[in-house]
Image (cartoon, rainbow, N blue to C red; front, side, top):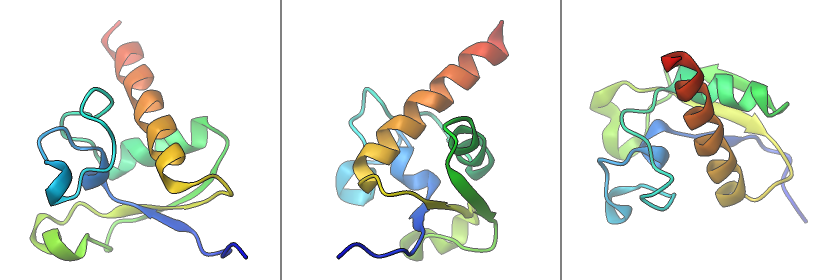
Length: 98
Protein backbone atom coordinates (compact mmCIF):
# COMPACT_ATOMS: atom_id res chain seq x y z
CA UNK A 1 0.00 0.00 0.00
CA UNK A 2 1.34 3.41 -0.99
CA UNK A 3 1.64 6.20 1.51
CA UNK A 4 -0.21 9.47 0.97
CA UNK A 5 2.64 11.45 2.52
CA UNK A 6 4.15 14.12 0.28
CA UNK A 7 7.62 13.44 -1.09
CA UNK A 8 10.42 15.75 0.04
CA UNK A 9 12.53 17.02 -2.83
CA UNK A 10 15.77 18.69 -1.78
CA UNK A 11 17.93 20.73 -4.22
CA UNK A 12 20.77 18.35 -3.27
CA UNK A 13 19.02 15.56 -5.22
CA UNK A 14 19.42 17.49 -8.49
CA UNK A 15 22.80 19.19 -7.95
CA UNK A 16 25.50 18.32 -10.51
CA UNK A 17 28.24 19.36 -8.05
CA UNK A 18 27.23 16.59 -5.64
CA UNK A 19 28.24 12.96 -6.17
CA UNK A 20 25.76 10.10 -6.03
CA UNK A 21 27.36 8.89 -2.82
CA UNK A 22 26.83 12.34 -1.24
CA UNK A 23 23.13 12.49 -2.15
CA UNK A 24 22.50 13.28 -5.83
CA UNK A 25 19.63 11.13 -7.13
CA UNK A 26 19.57 11.84 -10.86
CA UNK A 27 22.14 10.95 -13.53
CA UNK A 28 24.82 13.58 -14.09
CA UNK A 29 23.49 14.42 -17.57
CA UNK A 30 20.14 15.42 -16.00
CA UNK A 31 21.67 17.13 -12.95
CA UNK A 32 21.72 20.93 -12.69
CA UNK A 33 24.16 23.54 -11.45
CA UNK A 34 22.97 25.12 -8.21
CA UNK A 35 19.30 24.14 -8.27
CA UNK A 36 17.11 26.11 -5.85
CA UNK A 37 14.00 25.08 -3.99
CA UNK A 38 12.02 27.87 -5.69
CA UNK A 39 12.98 26.46 -9.11
CA UNK A 40 11.83 23.01 -8.01
CA UNK A 41 8.53 24.51 -6.86
CA UNK A 42 8.02 26.30 -10.19
CA UNK A 43 8.86 23.16 -12.16
CA UNK A 44 6.43 21.09 -10.08
CA UNK A 45 3.67 23.62 -10.68
CA UNK A 46 4.43 23.61 -14.43
CA UNK A 47 4.00 19.81 -14.31
CA UNK A 48 0.60 20.27 -12.59
CA UNK A 49 1.77 18.70 -9.32
CA UNK A 50 0.60 19.80 -5.89
CA UNK A 51 3.68 21.33 -4.31
CA UNK A 52 4.52 23.42 -1.24
CA UNK A 53 7.78 25.21 -0.49
CA UNK A 54 9.29 24.40 2.93
CA UNK A 55 12.10 26.95 3.25
CA UNK A 56 12.90 26.02 6.85
CA UNK A 57 13.30 22.29 6.11
CA UNK A 58 16.89 21.38 5.19
CA UNK A 59 18.51 18.07 4.26
CA UNK A 60 19.78 16.39 7.44
CA UNK A 61 23.32 15.91 6.12
CA UNK A 62 23.52 19.50 4.78
CA UNK A 63 21.57 21.47 7.38
CA UNK A 64 24.16 24.28 7.33
CA UNK A 65 23.41 25.20 3.67
CA UNK A 66 19.83 26.33 4.43
CA UNK A 67 18.50 25.30 0.99
CA UNK A 68 14.96 24.33 1.98
CA UNK A 69 12.91 21.72 0.15
CA UNK A 70 9.65 21.20 -1.72
CA UNK A 71 6.88 18.84 -0.60
CA UNK A 72 5.18 17.24 -3.60
CA UNK A 73 2.07 15.08 -3.58
CA UNK A 74 2.22 12.58 -6.44
CA UNK A 75 1.61 8.90 -7.12
CA UNK A 76 4.72 8.71 -9.32
CA UNK A 77 7.87 7.07 -7.97
CA UNK A 78 10.35 9.59 -6.56
CA UNK A 79 13.07 8.89 -9.18
CA UNK A 80 10.62 9.43 -12.03
CA UNK A 81 9.45 12.64 -10.37
CA UNK A 82 13.02 13.90 -9.96
CA UNK A 83 13.85 13.28 -13.62
CA UNK A 84 10.71 15.13 -14.76
CA UNK A 85 11.48 18.07 -12.46
CA UNK A 86 15.10 18.27 -13.62
CA UNK A 87 13.97 18.33 -17.26
CA UNK A 88 11.39 21.02 -16.52
CA UNK A 89 13.95 23.21 -14.70
CA UNK A 90 16.21 22.94 -17.76
CA UNK A 91 13.33 24.16 -19.94
CA UNK A 92 12.62 27.04 -17.54
CA UNK A 93 16.28 28.09 -17.56
CA UNK A 94 16.43 27.89 -21.37
CA UNK A 95 13.36 30.15 -21.67
CA UNK A 96 14.96 32.59 -19.23
CA UNK A 97 18.05 32.97 -21.41
CA UNK A 98 16.11 33.96 -24.55
